[in-house]
Image 1 (spheres, rainbow, N blue to C red):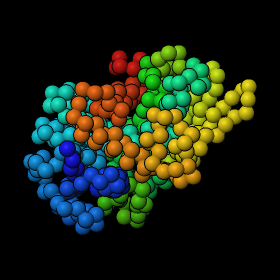
Image 2: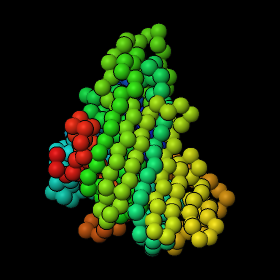
Image 3: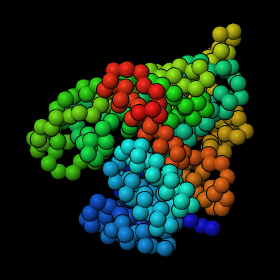
Length: 381
């Protein structure tokens, strides 16, 4: 069964979805934008067959099997719900919803309709992140005891920087945590195979007033301060979170969108009783392996050197770099192969709606901890 896709939202990440689908040979039938004008412009720029006039029109198109949601967070729940009820599988950008009440309903709806729901935690699909998971599972570093790291960006460093994510009505009460912190948390909990059970969080709004432009601004596009209005900001520019995971594993995460010179640096280190692993997304071709009783190692991204189960996630030979766009390709390959196989009761290797719900529960625990200035048990909020 050859599946056909449609993409809602053709901003920065929506275009990445279209490019990756085309690399896999998955037909992209059309798109729906925020207006007729943006839809028409996207169709022309990306040579898409059809521009939909409404969500109902897309939902009624029997030629579309899977819809990718690359829209602001506040739209995810309604769009995913209506599309699944119309018989579509859904792959949604993160975070899945605005809160855990919505994400729990989507998990239930996916089960009720028999449709597959996935969330675009694509950073799992760097080959060396897959290898890190295999090494931890295989006991290569002994028993994991500590996990620490950060996800740092600078695209919101200045008061003149603006994006829809800054508005809590569009993005939710958390911003740096939900936008990039969930990527980090998903990655390390997936690599270690353990969930966070309690945490203590500190959230900071570094820039309390920003300049909102009077026109449309794309993600990572610089705004014009001369054509903007001052707006008070409540969402987090920065966060640090102490946490305990299952199995006596302790950790700390720092996220920031105001760290000059850090374009998109996700870094983690996992320390075990026999060794350590470290990796960062700005140098994705090397996994550092730390030892006490012998020389440290640097494992390059080379399929011939990776664990057998990981090799399929490295598309190119050693010495040929693979980066951010390739992670979407590998995620979508997992997602579409699963649906095409036809056994929807089989284990799922990709991030699911359940994954997205777990991240929303974590976000709510982080918000509560920061507000109450106390440790919080995850899932008891």
